[in-house]
Amino acid sequence: MRAVVRHRLDDGLSDALGEVVALDDSSVSVATRRGVRVVPRGAVVAAKEVPPAPSRRGAAHLAPSMGDLQRVMVEGWPPIERAALGDWMLRAAGGFTGRANSVLPLGDPGLPLADAVLAAERWYAERQLRPLFSLYGPEGFTVGDDALGTLLTGRGYTDVNRSVVMTASVQALESAALAATRTTGPPAVGAAEVTVHAEASPSPAWWAASDERRRRHRDTAEAIMAGCPDQVFLSLALGGRVVATARVAFARAWAGVFGVYVAPDSRRLGLATALVGAAAAHARARGIASTYLQVEATNEAARGLYRRLGCATHHEYVYLAAPEASRPTGAPAGQPVQRTSSSGM
Image 1 (cartoon, helix red, strand yellow):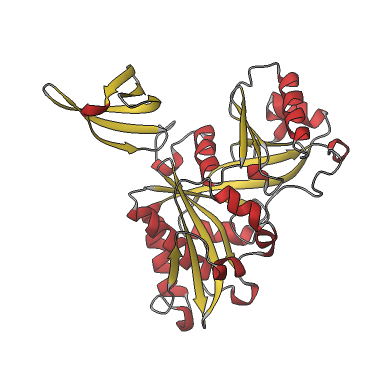
Image 2: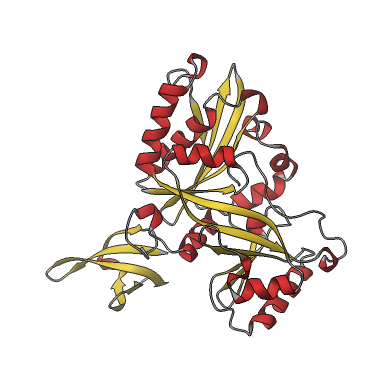
C-alpha cells in the first residue's frame, strides 16, 4: 500500500510518504522519493493509507495513472485466486465476471510477449477457464494501439465488452446526488421519504433485490466480496419492499461503487441517484476523497446519470477473449463478463 507514516525524531515529528515495502514487528520500511526510510515501530505516531501518487495535474480523482487506478479497482472486486507473471496479474474466480477472471497487464511480464501470452493461457486452461485479457487505455483507444492487443487479435481473440471507468470527487458527488434527489424526485420518493439502509454484510433482502445473475452466482460473489478489506451494502425500500441495491468497496484510500441495481418496475424514480449519494456519504465518513465506478460503454443511460452527478471518464478497458475453440472441455459457457443495469460488480 501507499501510506504516510508519522514518526518521532529526536527534534520532533516527520512523515514518511510512499509505498510500504516491508513491515515486521520492529520496523516499517517506506520507499519515499528520497529512498527507502526504515522507521522503528516504536517511533510510529500514526499511519494512514493514501491514494496512489498523481501522474498529472488537476482534480485528484483524475490524477492517478490508468495502471494505478486499475490496481485500486482490483481490491474493490478481488479475484479468489491471483498470480503474478512479471508485472501482469492473472485473476480467477470460477468464471464469474470478467474483472475477476482476466489477465491485467500492468507492465512487463518478464517474458517475451508471445511466451507470456502462452503462459497465461496455460494458467487459465488449468482452471478450466477461457483466457481473457483486460486491456486499458484512454477514452476511445483501440486494441491495436499496442503490441499486446495486436498479438492477441492475431491469435483470434475478440472484443467481447468495453467498459468506461468514471471517477468523481466524493464531496461533489454527494452534493450533486442530494440536490438531484431533492429537486427532481417525485413526492413519493423525495429526499425526506427515501431512506437508504446500510449494512456490513448483505442481508437476505439485499440478495433478493439484486440482479438475477448475481443471485445465480451467489456463492462465488460472496467469496469474491470476502476478499475486500472494507465494504458496505446499500438497499432502498419502497412500500416495505427492497427495490434497489448497491455495494461500496473501500480500498487504497478510494471508494468504488459496484452493482447499482434498481428493479425494472421502480426505475426513473431517482433511486439510483439516492444510492450513489449514500455511497459518497459513507466514503466521506471514512475520510476518502475520490470514488470510481465502472459502467459498460453501451449503457448510455447510466453514463448520462453519472455525468450529471459530476463523474468524468478516467479511461476505458476492453476484454479480449480467446477463440471459443480454446475453451477447455468442461469450462463454463458464455463470456465471463458481468453485465448489469448500471455499474458493474
